Length: 252
Image (cartoon, rainbow, N blue to C red; front, side):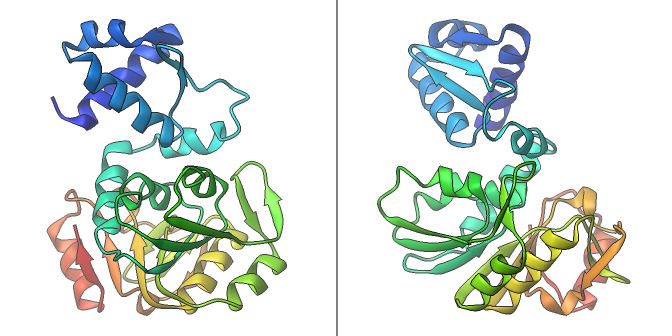
């Protein structure tokens, strides 16, 4: 049984009973307790549960990243696949922009294995993910805190971004199409992502296939903003061909 399948089953158990001991989960899944402990630590790092002495519990309503975690749980397997692919593009010593998208956040567990990095982000969950990692320096963008999105936005944040340069930017989007390029529900999030892309040498758009071919109400950037689209293997071949014809290189 792979990690993604174990993860789904562990979270389902916690949905049913709120908390579980390591051995209980191990017995239910038929997996060793050592593997379950490792899985619980990984899920806690991702903000999907809270570790307790001897086990784990479901992230409570007052968990500081509960709203973000709800969004991060959508299409979770695809997001983890994309996060792993995106992290593989990073080299030790890189300086990165990372926006507050939940798919971008999925890179965090894999980046911890990369080596020394400098990350510039407006995401509070990204900041929290690296608080226990000495090799990764986080530059938190200043500005107004958006409690719902667990991120920093506003004019000050844009000015902060304009003061820095990164070799790579990893951004998300609410919609992507050949006709309308990158689209979003929120002007403030779109502004942050576009500013990061402008200040980076190479731009990676992280987007699961469910958002491709669909448009949100705000058009904020053409396809030419993006160097690479990192997506999942469920992207239809016809759509992949259209994006490639538009100059986008695919990683899937």
